Image (tube, rainbow, N blue to C red; front, side):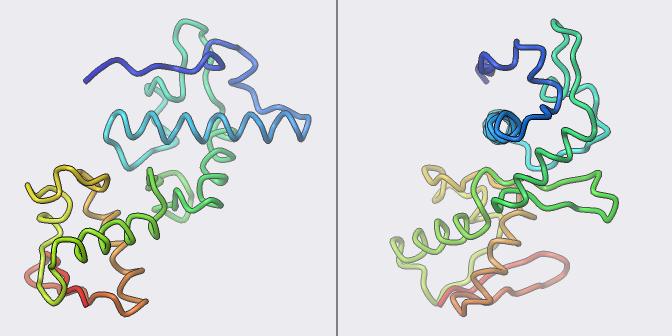
Length: 174
């Protein structure tokens, strides 16, 4: 894995403090949300814990600056608003974060199913997320919990049916 390329803002101390001026704060949140998505994709992570104070995403050691829990929550709330995150607990301390929205993931998977002629066939979540046939797809490597959420959206639209057997999931596409 190559080193992550931090944006210039990451070396700017005020970037780590929630800005009071609305226009500046909105721009700050935009840069932070983009940074969260790029960093999590680079590290192949789909979950975040607000209490993880060791992550370089929350802490720039060279500046000795750290994101406050308030700013982290503001960033995650913005990601939630755009469909890129959901809290995993009621206290909103653990989050699932998506590089693409769940709808985008669902559409990518469904397009792949259509292109590869797998309509009316059953696939496991593992085949979709990690199988050889999906290696070139943008959704390859997606966390199975994220994939399951995306497939639930497709199921609501009548494009597939989720099947659960012995604690694992499969999906039949229509």
